[in-house]
Image 1 (cartoon, rainbow, N blue to C red):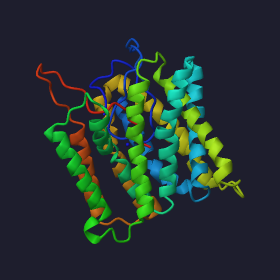
Image 2: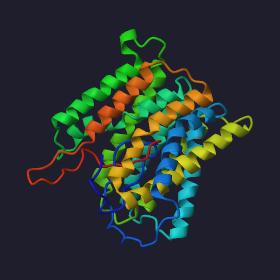
Image 3: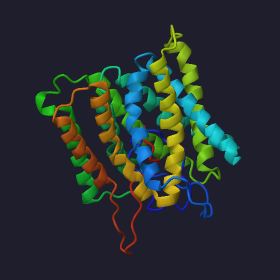
Image 4: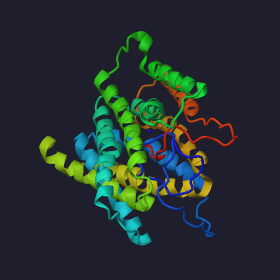
Length: 344
């Protein structure tokens, strides 16, 4: 799809598809608002789970009418538009530092342009259900990378066990005992590489964008804008102008961006502020379940027994990797990696 125990501040730029961890603090926390949200947090939590869970179905539908890079461009453009409106309403300012924009450019590549494109290409040849489950491996990749890249992270027996359990789940989903029979290796590898791209980006964000003085919304909106620019450069080189504008794929791409990449970020940020990242990150465990249900019921994708069983094992392993050890003083240590909740 890894973060501090409780947000003393807004999160760093959000990565759209993202399971299992929370964002780094970048600015002082705003004073608590006495204004109660119009919708109960449980309703917004359910909405966020559905939006991110259906993202993989929308990618599949979008690629029926557009090239993968075009799906990603439309997604980023729609998501950026939603966040631009939110920034205008809140009168939020864009980052002013050129150095911050440079770091955001790199973050946009690893957290948006690359994984979104890889998932779109992957779903040309693999079911949306498998893509959703591959996405749930992000916390596993994140823990493995953080043990090497983040010196303050220390492995515990529980988290190492979770890592091992999670990858057993991946092998179960892929049917390793059958020699991966019937599996599209290229598409699956792309989906797993997309999941790996997220923690690479989260580690980079944690090291470079904490303490910039900009708000979460400003950083995220700027990041999505830069991702849109990156795809705008790629499109003329690798794609041609579509022959038409098919209605259903177009609606799917717009919904993927406006809801799954724009509105979802706003819902996520509101949940983290209201109920804390520990509760908000639980949305991670609903995403592959919803993605699987949507793919089977609405797209008619086949489901063998090892897919849901393996998915449950992956989620159990991911949950263990997110567990926090207590220090000798009795206070919880921060999890291995700080990053946004966004799923895809």
